[in-house]
Amino acid sequence: MSKKDPIERISEIILKAFQDVFREMCPGVPLPPVPGDHLQEPKDKQFGDLTSNIAMRFARVIKAPPAVISGKISERVSGMLDSIFEIDKVEPKGGFINIWFSGLYYLELLKDIKRKNGKFGSSDHGKGKKVNLEFVSANPTGPLTIAHGRQAAIGDALSRVLRFNGYHVTNEYYLNDFGRQITMLARSVEVRYRNLFGKNEEMPEDGYMGEYIADIAEEIKQEKGDKLLKKGVATEDFFREYAVRHMMKLIRRDLEDFRVKFDVWTSQAKIEGHDKVDKILKTLEKKGHIYREDDATWFRSTSFGDDKDRVVIKNDGTYTYLAPDIAYHDDKYQRGYDWLIDLLGPDHHGYIKRMKASVQALGHPSETLDILIVQLVTLLRNGETVSMSTRKGEFISLRELMDEIGTDVTRFCFLMRKLDSHLDFDIELAKKESTDNPVFYVQYAHARICSILKHNQKGKTNISSKNADLGLLGEKQEKELMRKLSEFPMIVRSSADTLEPGKLITYLNELARNFHSFYTECRVVSEDSGLTGARLYLVECVKIVLVNGLGLLNITLPEKM
Image 1 (tube, rainbow, N blue to C red):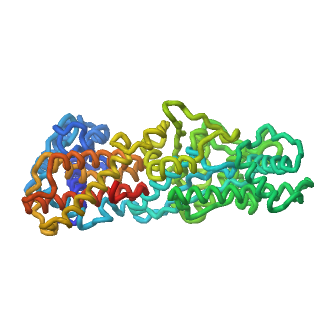
Image 2 (image 1 turned 45 degrees about the horizontal axis):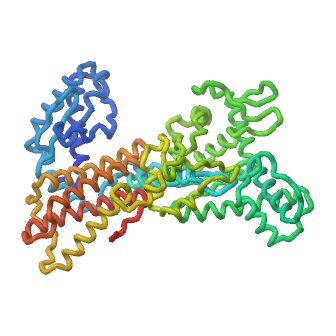
């Protein structure tokens, strides 16, 4: 039997048949590239175990009805079934190619899972491509919020999924330690520090009002006493550096406890301090992409598809946000990355076109930069929305949420919806230990498997699955569970291709549902030693997939609950 993943083999079979049909119907035309996600699970099981939309995708290119193309492809595959152990039958249906697995396919699938174990579902699809994944990058003006937490969970899971698919990924945090917001942070801390000595000074209009500002001020008072009451440049610099250092210490601690690790921390102050911004603007000017108008300096981004040109130096001589960001992204390319991925908040939608334009102006294809917008989170408690404002100091921090409901639940819930969809986070539901709680439901499946295996080891017979007769697995629930296991490599690959690690959440919930149904209807350890061995083998395979899937999401798996 082939050592390739069974789904990969089926994909190759369909692809080969498609290529033959394409050459027949389009002689002399170069073969088009086929996306790896042409195979999907049909929503209705009457249409098979797998379906391919390859005929629908290329009907316009071939200039023929999808039903005709799918019919020709199905005919070719059907003619090869004697040599294809994975497929029982294949039928065209309205432009789709529907595929039914063979019994032998399921047996080989389970053996494949056991053989690969922790690597089941992985691939070399990324071929070592160097990826820079930047996420969170919160301004050090306050504790990490739940919005930052959602970015952290998505970014960390995405990096793990990409690595599992053969990419070489660097997690990077861009420390925005320069500019007006940092100046305002320093002034806010200084006002609270002076208040501690009876100075009746009011907070600046845009100052930060949270309790953490008072905590920093108190810490400074304990260390420096009243030595900083005299104002001056040195004093301003001290408050700025101290406040940033204090906040980054808290941010690093929160990220560490949230199980998020960054490989690189890049300082905006260093990017600007090393004249990188000035140098990159001069480079763009030499290429004809920079011009001056109305006492400002502009980037000609409309040359690359933006809806308008963008200011990079204002008429007062200061940079806009875009200028250092261009220099920062150039710095990433200079470090040898093939693909840049940025996770940003919803207030950065308008940033996508201008950044895409900037990388093209630097000489890189636009597809080497992906900017993903992660939508905000609305917290609900007892059905009521929890109002939040970082500047006013009215918010629930990531730390508070972790402390209240736990890291696993927090991460799981942050990943439950597509990253570009707004997330309503129900705190009370997240705290429930019941099947209504999705993370509990999945973790309980793992704990139940551990209990089954432990019970078997303690039994009188202690049946081993080593030489199991997998041909005994024929019940409906067993087949549905095996079918769900077979989807895991496709889900992992699709999660990487679409940059949506949350697809794993949906899959793991479905796998847990199939397992609980199997457990209810099929007694695993029984007097029938042959059937017990086969079912233990199946259960061990489910455990492997649960471990691999939740491992990609960086969520723990308790052995008992």
